[in-house]
Amino acid sequence: MTSVSATHLVLIPSYNTGATVYETVRSARAQWSPVWVVVDGSDDGTAEGLQRMAADDAGLRVWVLPQNQGKGSAVLHGLRAAEAAGFTHALTMDSDGQHPAGLIPAFMQASQRRPDAMILGRPVFDASAPLLRVRGRRVSNGWTQLETLGAGVGDSLYGFRVYPVADLAAVMARQPWMRRFDFDTEAVVRLAWRGIKPINLDAPVKYLSASEGGVSHFRYGRDNLLLTWMHLRLMLEFVFRLPLLLWRRLARRPPFQH
Image 1: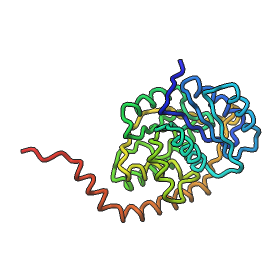
Image 2: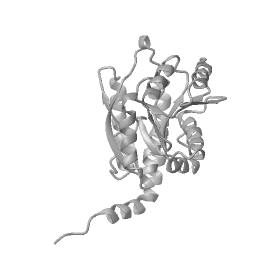
Image 3: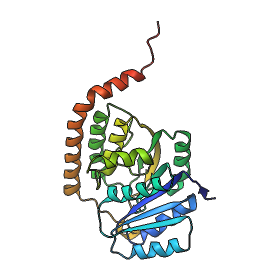
Image 4: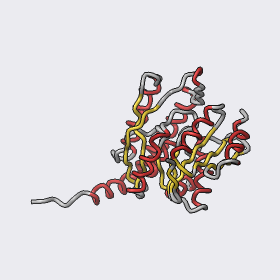
């Protein structure tokens, strides 16, 4: 049975994933309403296909950006529209079939219990996961733990998450970064700096093969360089924020008991 909410929506940024996006959207709609899709300048015909789906489905809404701007930009477009429509939280998921639509209700329920938190997917990999990708994310996760003073972010890159809409939109509005592949990691770091507590829930991740319709826009050289630049920026800012972060950490400690 599809759950309906006036506060929590599913937000799917999409760029040139081919027919896979249709199954992703159908799976999400089977679990939740509303589902919003932001087509980030796709030229594979899926924008038109999604618009036809939305014409027959009141629980589905589609935005089409005129040119590719990056995942973070697509998410921000959806966040601004969500905030204007009165939604408080958005579950983001990729359009390429990697994320488990069946867990949408569980993640939304966790968010409804703790609306002050961000609900983060902690990936459970199977044999389809590229070893280089699995090992590489450990580096990013290590930097994230340092940048947040061990705030408890289980994984910095997995994009299946529920965010507080107003907080994330405000964070993104204040700086020009986190618009492309750097979005997922920088979002959790900056929200942790803002005092948003991470709550981690295990979720499987599936890397589809080409024969299964899998599409990846990750480029090891380009995107690892982008992540390196991102962590350099965050570490420099972390140094300036360190006194405030330490003060917050000490303020949250329970009083010493004799």
